[in-house]
Image (cartoon, rainbow, N blue to C red):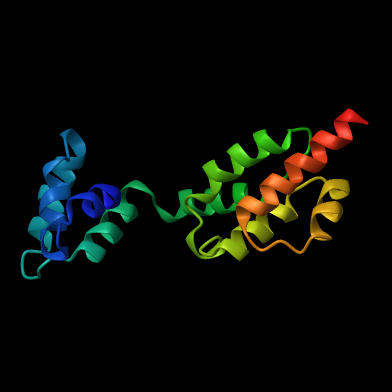
Amino acid sequence: MENAFALTNVGDNQKVEYATYFLKGRSNYWWETAKALEAAEIITWDRFKKMFLDKYFPRYMQTQMEMKFFELKQHNMTVGEYEKKFTEVSRFMGEYVDSEEKRAKRFQQGLKPWLRSRVAAFELTTYAEVVQKAMVIEGKSEQN
C-alpha cells in the first residue's frame, strides 16, 4: 500500500480509507470490529498499521523472523542464493537494516568466513557494493 500511496500521492488523512477498501473476507470483518472499538478516535495511518500488524503479524511471528534473520548464514549457498534469502528475511527487520551501512554490514557478517574476510578488506559501506564484491570474489575462487 505504501508504494501505491507514493505513486498516487494519497494524503495521510486518506490512507486508512483507501487501504481498508481493499480488505476482503476475514480481514474486512476484523476491520469493521476494530473500527467500531476505536469509534471515539480518528484512526491515523500509523495507528492502522500498528493494529493491522498486531493482528496479522503478531509478536511471536516477529520474534521468529528475527531469529531467522540473525541465524541466516551463507553456508552452502552461492552468494546469489544467500542474497535472495537475505532480502526475503530482512524486509521485516526495519531497525537492523534501515541504512545502507547496516544492511551491508549484516549481509557481510553472514558470508562464509573465507569470503567475509576478503570482502571486509575493501571496507565497503553499501549493500550493493558488498554483494557485488562477494560475487566477484566467489566467481574468481570458483575459476581457480
